[in-house]
Amino acid sequence: MPSPFDIEEIYPDEAPTPRLPRRQAGTSPQSVAVTLLADYTLRTRAPLPSAAIVELLAETGVTSAGARTAISRLARRGVLEGSRQGRNSFYRLSRGAAADLSAGGSWIVASTADTQAWDGCWTVVAFSLPQDRGTQRRALRGQLRWLGFAPLYDGLWISPYELAEPARSRLAQLAPGAVTVFRGRQDALDVTGQRAPVDAWDIAAISAQYEDFLRRWTPLASRLESVDGPAAGGGGGGGGGGGRGGDTFHPPLPLPLLSSGWLRRPARDLFTAVYDGLAEPAQRHVRAVVARFADPVPPGIQAHTTADMLAGVREDACGAGPD
Image (cartoon, rainbow, N blue to C red; front, side, top):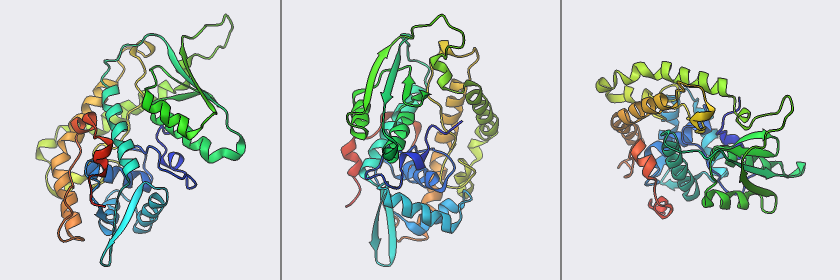
């Protein structure tokens, strides 16, 4: 089952502008680097020393060479912006990446609350792009996954929920004249083997991943009151300051489509407990690492919480850092 937030797909090397990375996405060095900067600098776009980023990524198992390659590629793709202060290089999130990450984080927290009513209709996005526009096609697919869609067929993606206007605009920009969006109910055919819309998602795999998430992080949630110091950075994605509860949430399918006892809400509650519980000690740890490579420590290193994710930040606020 492919990740719904494949950063290499959403940010192809040839892409002219950044498109929606996922702040907890995957395990690649680029994904962990984006997670790190989003978790601690999203609201301020504070620049971090590249050496500090490398050090923090090392805590997740990323080699120094892998970390520097990831930073370079993210800068080339427009996700990060680089600057120099004396002999030291610094990187921060670009305005576009920060705005997209903020919008996505807000959607993730809000949409996993199990409060959305479903009218039984599906939003369908159909597109057709020739083979020689593979980069554009990958970016479009990445954007659709980011918005909670799944492929029922190769060029036909679906979601149970309405597509908001900002999302419509992003899709139109990615593939002008090549995308059609419509919404309606499934017209069941009296034939054997008809594919149901929900089959676009691997429900069994998602259920297993929720079970794994709960099994993996429940012991940590019970110990959060004693977490302190450098070990606080070990919450996400295999350890280190790069994340706090690094597994991703899955698109919020309506509960009537799912089995009883679906584990999305328990997983969301556990994520909140771990992510918010580690925020303060993880922030101290990140600042301590940055202090080894920058004097003074850049202002604006602030751990994100789920409340911050839900509130989001204004797009103009994503430019709050110094230019």
